[in-house]
Length: 361
Image 1 (spheres, helix red, strand yellow):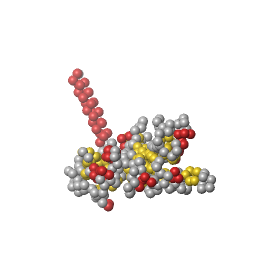
Image 2: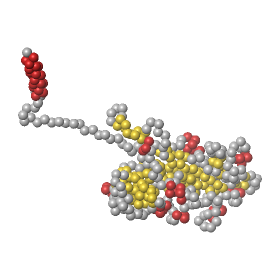
Image 3: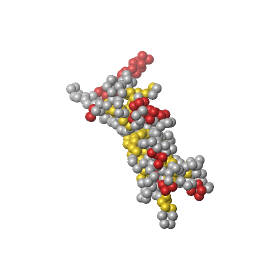
């Protein structure tokens, strides 16, 4: 009896398995019938070229580089409760703890909150007033320079733009133009799932450390010029009338650095070596067709070194407009060298050109 029960149980299990198998076979295709398996394609893609910059607005934009020419110390005399920089004859309203009026303006700050680097095309000049300051503009802050010996000694004002990564730019009615750069804020971005599906590329929560580019204006006046540089005198009444001073204009145009493959930069001594990010070196022996450093063109591209695009310190200071290192104003060699922020390297030309971009942080 025991063995019979065991046999019956096994038989039931076999029947159950067989029944299950018969159910599965019921949906199988007939012999010779084709079976097609499909799968929908989807793109895991986000646009990582995000262009966002912020600039000053309101009074900060319109008043920061407004200035007062004060050859007789009137501002300090009339504002005894204010801190006026001693010896400053050109005064800018200041928000610093040190001064209320200073010889150098507050900084105007451009903040790059985008994920891509930017270049800034900057144009600065003095705009003459309607009446008649004609004392000229010095190229040196101590009025000792000039195209000919002692020429600056006859000028009344020195005005200059102090911009990041640059030597001072003396200003006059002739435009000063140059290009510089701010690196990206890519390290402040992340890819995450979007609430409606797919993915998005956005600033990280709490991100606050963004790259900036700043410029200021500074000024001085020449105490040795004729008094009539600053005012006119009525020949009949001897009444003095202050001359209208010029104004300043600084215009900047931000441009995104787009459509570039990633590259890296190595610094050895005074030289820079740019490599493909995906392949050490990687550029072979053919020199790039173009290299930009901080948006400035490297006129003569050096030969590659072991597949690296090679940029020398000489390439850099010549891109900044100096023929020799000795031409760089005292104290600004390090400003320029340490101000190298990005490179754009182009390989090939026309439709076959490929650009690579690298930053130094």
